[in-house]
Structures are given as structure tokens and as C-alpha cells.
Length: 270
Ligand SMILES: C[S@@+](CC[C@H](N)C(=O)[O-])C[C@H]1O[C@@H](n2cnc3c(N)ncnc32)[C@H](O)[C@@H]1O
Image 1 (tube, protein in one colour):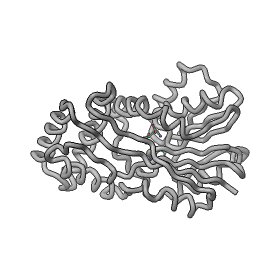
Image 2 (cartoon, protein in one colour):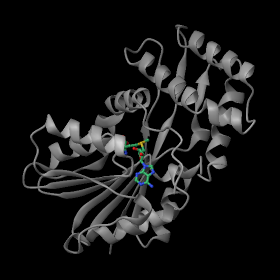
Image 3 (tube, rainbow, N blue to C red):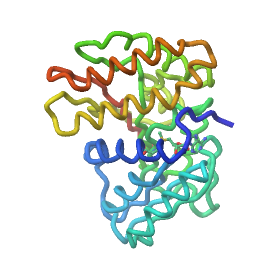
Image 4 (tube, protein in one colour):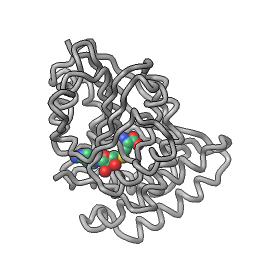
């Protein structure tokens, strides 16, 4: 089984939901989805982005989200209930061993995965399944983190230590905190071609109305991983607490900027 660092407790679901609100329109723009397309969304979380893609494909299309965690799946079904979109479906499943009905293999126009490869031990096994799911000419799109790309300026005291500890907690779980830089090579390894790459801006600055949401997201992921970081002696309690306090203060400064990008890559099945 993979180890998922963030979990699915109610607080974490609120964080993930707000993160979706921050980035979904930018991610959607890059995807170029057309009405009538069939889309597979792997590791669909709360289903918000799956449902956003479903709006683009419309009632003649289809969107299928696959999610392993029962809490996330329950929330995505609740989100869907409010939507009246019978062309969307969520199923429980493991991204590393995608299971589809026999007649569904090789039929999707697009297989998409965002923030999932960073949480599995064998990212290639996810992409092999995605490649198998799409039709010839279909696309596989991967969006994921490369945690080395995070810059805060002016840098709050203690941030390098806490961020490094957070990064190291990924490999303690057997996952790759730098998976973002590998997306093109994973697509290539899995047989996809015409590969192109891009980034989605995931930063903000103090005077922007959304800045506090970015700061909360950052503090939220660090607090969520605290137990793991301490357990693996990646940071001590005092250093962690001070770094969070400094980050909170930094979030109130008028000149603060957060620079981060999500790595994005697309390949086509021959
Ligand atoms: C950071 S969330 C991203 C969710 C969604 N893709 C998004 O961008 O909002 C990662 C999701 O992947 C799920 N997940 C982790 N490992 C998985 C696996 N092996 N199979 C399926 N889902 C998995 C987690 O439960 C979580 O809901």
C-alpha cells in the first residue's frame, strides 16, 4: 500500500478543497478539454477537479474519478450529489493498479492525474494504467509537485529547516518529493509520445486577496506532517513550532511573496 502523507481528516479535506479553489481554473485552461470527451481522473480526491472537467465535456461526455480513500470518496459523492451531472462517476480503486470494466480500456480521450504520483511508491505503475486506459491518439496528463521549487521571500527564519524536514518526510514514506522533474521521462518510459511540458503558477504575494489562502495551505501541509517529521527525527518540536510562528508572521508582512509552480506534462498514445 502507498503512504499518503496528508490523510483525509476533516481539516485536511478543508485544506484540499480550498487548494482546488485556488488552482482549478489555471489547471483547466492548460488541459484544453472538448465537449463529448471521456476523461479518467486518477486519485480524484474530493472530486472537485473531476467535476470541473465534467463541466467542460458536458452531458455527451463522461468523467470517471478513481480514489482509494473512503473518506475522500464519500466527500466526492456528496459533492457530485449537488451537481446533477449523471455523466460523472466516482469509484474506489488503487491508482497503482487501475481496474476498469473490460469495455472501458482503451476508450478514454484523456487520463489525468494531479498530486498523486508524489504519493505512490511506483509512479510508473500508475502511468502504465493511464496509458492503457486511453484510446490511440488519447492524452495522458500528469501534474505534480517538485518540492525544491518552493521559495519564500523575504525568507522567514526557520523555513529552510522545516521545508527540508517536510521534503525528507516524503522519502521516509518511500515516495519521491521531486517527482515533478521526472514527469516527462515517466511518460516516455510508459510509451507516450509527442510529450510537452509546462508549469502551473502556484504562488501569490501579500497584497493579493488570495494570499492568506496560500499561506494557510502551506502551514496546513506542514502541521499535517508534523507527527511524521518528529517521529523520524527530521526536526524537533521547538524548531518546528518556532518556524510555524515565523511563517505566520511572514504571512502578515506587506512585502511577502510565495513562489511555487506545479509541474505539468502531457503525452499522447500512438
Ligand atoms: C493531494 S490529493 C489530490 C486529489 C486531486 N487529484 C486534486 O488534485 O485535488 C491526492 C489524493 O490521492 C489519493 N491517493 C493516494 N494514493 C492513492 C492510490 N494509491 N490510489 C488512489 N488514490 C490515492 C489520496 O487519498 C488523495 O485523495
